[in-house]
Length: 216
View 1 (cartoon, rainbow, N blue to C red):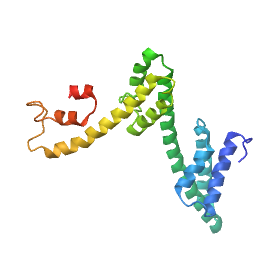
View 2 (view 1 turned 90 degrees about the vertical axis):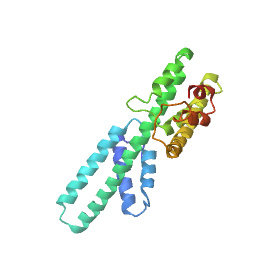
View 3 (view 1 turned 120 degrees about the horizontal axis):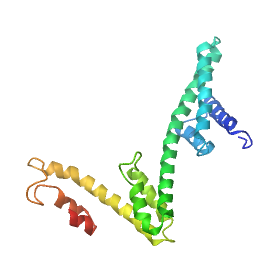
View 4 (view 1 turned 180 degrees about the vertical axis):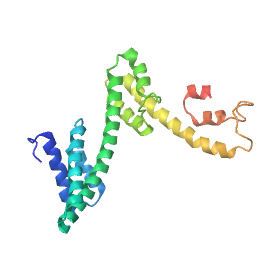
């Protein structure tokens, strides 16, 4: 695919290439379609690709509806199925790219903040109440991203290690909660004598950090 072509034309050519490759029976899985999109689409240009895809989809839908020749109609129908596969993998690409950009943005906000404002930046980007909060996998990726700056700045290494240890503690608590619930012979409750009815003492045993152990 020529890099000298206008972006819209490049994306139309990419879509046509995937469709033709599909019609030739050379696409063995949707993963192959995804990888072609991953290689062919430039981050930040999704709107252009989406418009190109919409044009091809509309054109093929019209052809399937109006075509009288059975052979041409059959080919258009197969091409339309290929376009819909591209559409599903395009949605996957968008979700993955959005996640990648969110992690990169969070890492940039933390690493570029002044040293005395990094904790506030960290709390802001990891806030679970924001519109698109980072999930556990994305937090792991954020930890790895911060680790890349660890040699130059020990504070960032502490942030990275803190995320990793926090996620490990969360996993242990999550695993323990279900078993604790099944072990209770009395009705659930968080009152009563500390360490007897509630899960706090059980949770404290699952943690390796002194502060949360003291809180629990």
